[in-house]
Length: 192
Image 1 (tube, helix red, strand yellow):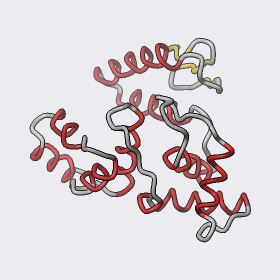
Image 2 (cartoon, helix red, strand yellow):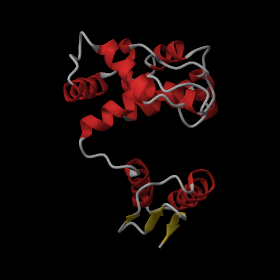
Image 3 (cartoon, one colour):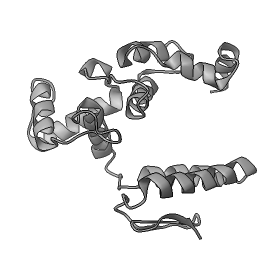
Image 4 (spheres, helix red, strand yellow):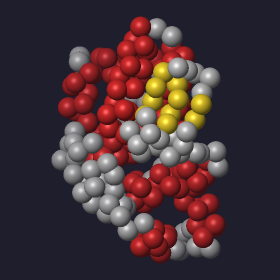
């Protein structure tokens, strides 16, 4: 990890330069470019491409099974087994099935139909067997709070503002936390 951070600092004088480096003409080019960075493999390359497309910085997304990483492939195999598909010979059938079953627009931009980036998320969450809606939000909040420093406090305030502005009312899980926040469908996040 230290080597990765050191190399990023050496290669990119300012954090914005890393972002400039990551943006490319399409997701596939970005995918391969990311993996040239020290310590960056196929998992983080996939995640970066997914985030850039979701946030509107790129209009293309990874849509080939050759871009899937190990844990998403494992999730896909488990999901196939659950549905009665052969994970290898019926991969395309599974993708078509999911496209028909979940025939809605991909969030957050709603500019395209759901596709492999959404299926990858489903497969990984299915394979984890421990996922509940809102878990990612809870874990990020917990990590920031555990830092217990000024920057963490600022991030928590920003986190609360962003959640309450953009995601209010979308949570489907109410969760009381010993970490001092409440995630509520009707009120967003509030500190306790």
